[in-house]
Amino acid sequence: MLAQDVAAPWPLPSFDNSSMDGYAVIAADVAAASEAEPVELAVVDDVPAGYRASETVRPGTAIRIMTGAPMPEGADAVVPVERTDAGAERVRVTAPVDSGAYIRRAGEDVVAGQTVLTAGTLLGARQLAMLAAVGSGHVLVHPRPRVAVISTGSELVEPGTALRHGLINDSNGYLLVAACREAGAEAYRVGPVVDDDASFLAAIEDQLHRCDLILTSGGVSMGAYDTVKAVLSQLGSVDFMKVAMQPGMPQGHGQVGEDRLPIITLPGNPVSSYISFENFVRPAIRRMRGLVDLQRPRLRARCTVEMSSPAGKRQFARASFLSSGEVVPVGTGQGSHVLGGLAAADALIVVPEDVVTVSVGDDVEVVDLRGA
Ligand code: AMP
Ligand code: MG
Image (cartoon, rainbow, N blue to C red; front, side, top):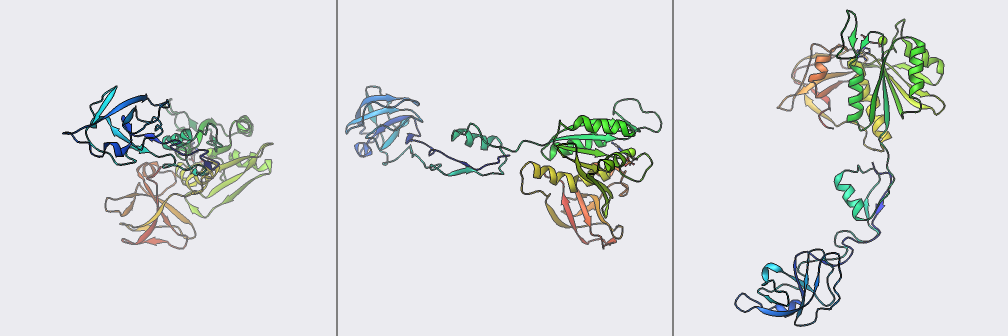
């Protein structure tokens, strides 16, 4: 992400040059040229791309020229080789050209001093070409933020290893790392970390100098082993609160360590974790990247089934777009542990705090998850 405006120190093209392989001529010389009566000119020089002609084009003469080579003095047009006999010493021109034909003028693309890219532009292939063309070898950029994703929970096991009864796979780690990457961050998994204070503290300390943002999942509700909350509360600069949303009530954020590294603590239930990520973390990552537009696109669509929503909480219901443009909730209910609905969703229906029922055919607000 570009963090500065870039101006062109010189014009593009920086000199008048030929857009064709052919002959630099004086257009008036070949005005009467035809297949039947070609005009013959003396070829006084040859100028490949990367060289300059040492001769001047005078009436009755031409200089052989290649695409991209600077226009010689005296010439005001290029005759493409296809309209000649391609002669080396003398050339027969079989068609006229207008004055100025097949010349790429200096500055016709970019004028000197023109701003070619502005701060906040994502540098992809096409933008890098422009930087290179104007000779910007070094520019200021926002680096991709590095995010450490720490999964907490003594019940968590690495996917692909045997599960004892009562244990589950760490899905949040993968969910959040992928979501961070989709949001444009560098992200990596840490853990799973067992629910004891010393292990969690060690995991946090280990990441302090490695990343720009720590994300944790789990351990922030009211449970007896909710280590994250217990440990970070004592550090003093992390606040925990309940947000009136469903799913995703328990949230926390603050700073840790000497360098006051930002930390966001997400709830453990995978759906809560994802919805919290969408609402609080994705915008933060985009902000860290230097983007101005932080939010997903939102639109209004007709909901095709009846839905209920808790009073006093803003519901983010996993939903899917129909080909008609309407939306329908997906999954077996909106429980915050229901991963099936999450995997099938490409939209979130946002039901406001004061709405408890959505009727069939109601217009609802929809977060569009389909984009990057
Ligand atoms: P917690 O917030 O730690 O009480 O966790 C709430 C629920 O989410 C529990 O059922 C946990 O087992 C589950 N959970 C916590 N972390 C993860 C994770 N990384 N992957 C999948 N489920 C998790
Ligand atoms: Mg837990």
